[in-house]
Image (cartoon, rainbow, N blue to C red; front, side, top):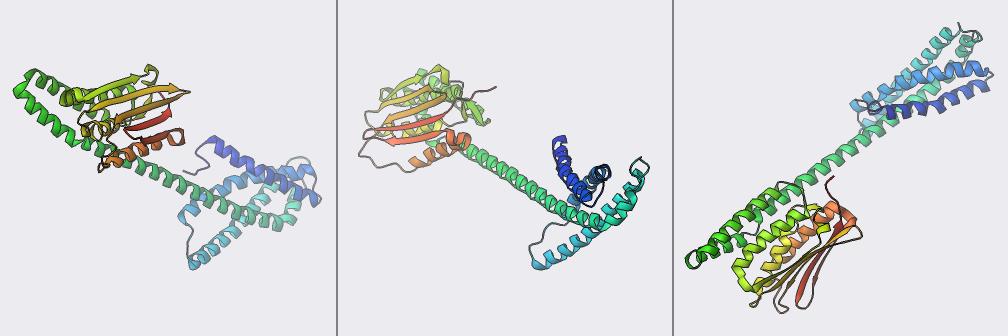
Length: 354
């Protein structure tokens, strides 16, 4: 469909653009001695006909896209030049026909004779207007191609994000599953009650993670519930070595964020922090609402003498990219390694479901 016909607003703007052209045509006629009545009576309906007539240019431009080669441009220039002469002549013919129809109106009897004398000027103006409509049509086509490319780029970005999320779900730290199953096997013999508890918790965690993985955005409340399910399992594994300090501001719980954004941070804190320390440590998970922004922190102890574990930065980079991809410059990501503490801070605007 013609881009100027997709909405009344666009069509109205296009038709309004012809008003100055009609005034220009009337001004030219007035400079040749035409009375204002004759000049405006011909210019306004003639420009309306021209506006409708030159709409067809877009279809021809779509069928004849611009060529990049000199030979192609030469051929197209010749084609458009010929078309401009024909359409300019057609517009002048419409002016001649319109003048004879208006001659029946009192006070416009001399209009056909005046138009006969002005046909070369009307034809030349028609040629210029047709070429201008060609340029406008190519601009509209270029804009449409740019919007289509932007749409496809957005679709590709969405597919990439979905692929990344699928990979993240598939990755859900296999080491965690292996360790949990090993712990479950060991507990079966020495503590069947805790083994059953761990089995239920593991099932609940997997159910929650798969449920969240089907959505692009989730409430922080759901991410926190998943983190609690994960930490409950890890507490059975680590016992007193893992201590938790959860400081959650209820006002932040409805905040929307990309799904499975918190889970990699908690896993990193356990795997690369507390698990590496013989005495374990305290994992601090806190949220607060400050001036319409959620501040989420995950903090864990670290061994200052230990080498940075391989792959530690990959999960953090993914979290940063997904956070900024969702909120842009409105969000902030910080990862700080102090002497004995590692802290990750996410800051993002509070957005909730409508």
